Image (cartoon, rainbow, N blue to C red; front, side, top):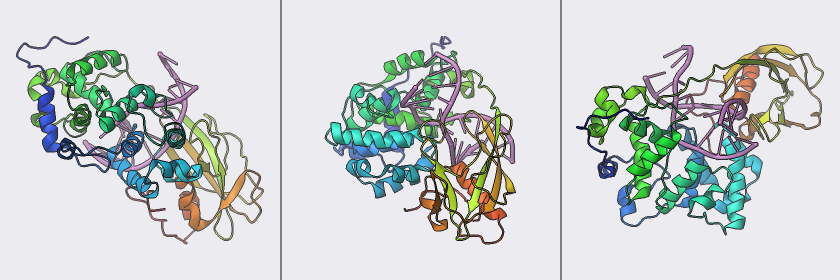
Length: 375
DNA sequence: CAACCGTGGCT
DNA sequence: TAGCCAAGGTT
C-alpha cells in the first residue's frame, strides 16, 4: 500500500531523469555513455553480460578490477567459452558467490554453441541461460539491445519506494514496485533509462544520507516531502547469524608448497580450492588431520558469510609426503593462480605468518583488492 | 517460497 | 570499528 501524497507532489517525469543522466552518467568500463549511444555507438553484449553477472549483489568498486582482468584475458565470448573452468574459477576468486563463475562459464559455452556466439536480444531467451534471472535478462535486453525491458534491481526498489512512500516491506512489495516502475518507464531510450536509475540509486538516492538536494525528482518524491527518505525501502527484519566452528589444516612442504583440495561443485564455495579441514558446525567437530604430522595451532581465522559466522582454528605442520588422494601440492609461488576464496587466503596467510619471519611478497595485510592482478 | 550463496567498500 | 549492505539467481 502507498501513503496518499499531497496534491502538490508532481508526477516524476522520466525526461527529467534522462536529462540528469545525460549530464552525470558515470563512466564505467562496460558502458557506452549517452552521448556516444545517441550517435549510434552500440554496446558489446558480451561486456554488458559480463558486467551484469559480476555486479549481482556486488559493488562497482569491487567489480572494476575483475572486469578489466577478465576482459584482458578473455576479450571475446569464444575465448571465455574455450577457457579451462579452473582458470575461470581462479580468476573469479575473491569476488564471491561462486555459482556465478560456474554459470558464467556454462553460459558462455551455451551461447557459443547454441546461439552462434551471439547473445539473444529478447528477455525470454536470455532468461533461459544459466546465471541469468529476471533482473539480468531485462538489464541485458535494455542496455545491450535497447529493448523496452523494465529493469528492477535494488536501486530501482529504493528509488520507487521513496518516490511513492511504499509502506509494504520487501520482499512483499516486489509486485507493487514492479507495477510502479512499469508506469514510470518512458517509451524511449530504455537502456539509458535503466542505467540512469542505477546511477541515481548509486550516487544520489543512496541507502544512507541520500543527496535529495541534487535529485532530479526531488519535487516528486513523497518520502522526501515527508522527510522520511532514509526509512525506505521498508524491510522485514533479518534473522541473526549463527556461529559455526571448524579446524583447517595448512600442511607446508619444505619447498613451501601448500596442500590443497577441491570443494564439491554444489554448496558453499562450490568448485573452489581449500586447505583440508573438518566440517563446520555449531559445536566444533573432532580433529581430522589430512596426514600424520606434528600439527600445532597457528591461530584463528574469523569470516562472516551471508548466513553464518565462521570461527576457524588453523593448524599447521611441516610435511614432506605425497599428496593424499584428491589433494595436490600447490607451489608457494603459484598460490595466486589457485581458485582460493578469500577465507582460504586468510587461512593460508595465518599459517604462513605464524610460521615465522619469511614474509613473502604478500605477508603484509592487503589493502584494497589483493586479488585481481594480471594472471 | 524461503533458504542458501561471499566479499569488500563504506559509514 | 563493527555493522550494514550491493546492478540476484537457484533450488
